[in-house]
Amino acid sequence: MKKIGIIGSGVMGHGIGQLYAQHGSFVTLYDVNDAALKQARTMIEDSLSAMVEKEIITSEEMVRTFDFLSFTTDFETAVKDAEMVVEVVPEVLDLKLKVYRQIEEIVSRETIITSNTSAIPLTELVQGAKHPERFIITHYFAPAQIIPLVEIIQINGTTDPMVLKKTQDYLTFCGKSPILLKKEVPGFIANRMQMALMREAFWLYENGIASAQDIDTVIKDSLGFRYVFLGPLEGQDIAGIGTTYNVGLKLFPVLDDTKTPHKFLKDMIDNNTVGLRTRKGFYEYTDESASAKIRTRNDNFLEVYKLRKQQQGK
Image 1 (spheres, rainbow, N blue to C red):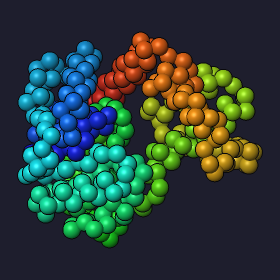
Image 2: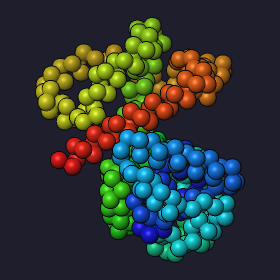
Image 3: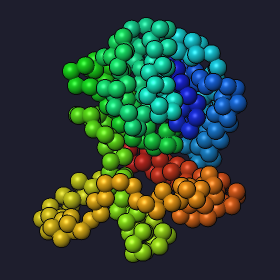
């Protein structure tokens, strides 16, 4: 795609913009003020510098990426003549609908309009749209420029098949792993699976079965280690479906099935212990260790990213 407009330059928007610019599309990042755009540019510079350090890209490629990036507080400049517009604004339906009305007043009928929403159904996002057939959800995961998965959500019988194909082909060209949901379901796939895991982790923590550190170690040094290259269903083929069935007979009845978030999470919110932002969550942080946590996460993600690219090249 020659030109792409990104509406929202925050945590997700800047990463999506970086990805597309790295692959040769002219990207215009829009936000409501210059301060947000300045922060976005800084985050992109930091991300690209880390990729250079890991020898994933060259310094010349880093410079070239900025040749394909521009930043603006003018909405029309961001979306005019764009082949795709990506909406990455807060999860407020009325706000998103307002943004779509603005987009459709400017762009051509052929322009694809996508949302990175993780919570609002596409059927709600297209209400009032002039051309609902060109709307889809492309759900990225942070950091969007690194994590391969993009979930694509359509409306059966409404979404234009060519919109899907063009988007899937472009995401694949950008090195992503796009997957298409056959049906719309709350939370899509990744967040449903993630929350199922988190519900059990919260139950184990709340009931004093193990410390936060030990629960995290179980995932990082067993399931996480395995799931980098082996999905849960293909893993069952190796383990044997019969074994899984018999284990399920014993475990399914005793797994946590609470229908609302665990009470201690609300207590943490009320006590303003919500993680890195307040320097205390399940763990405690200093300003330095909080920054180091993000850097270490991204560095480790880049190592896995590099390894995956090497594996795919074989």
